[in-house]
Length: 54
Image (cartoon, rainbow, N blue to C red; front, side):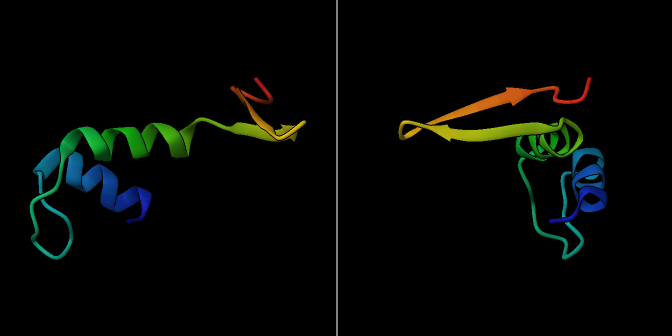
């Protein structure tokens, strides 16, 4: 889904095809798209930083 479809789904509980969607999942996808995240691997462990560039 695109961010536009996520916003539409959050408001209407439907995707562009008319299927029911989970509003919580759509909201989380919007947050994940809007929040920059930097991830790197150190010694086999994934380290993620939220708000990179803020």
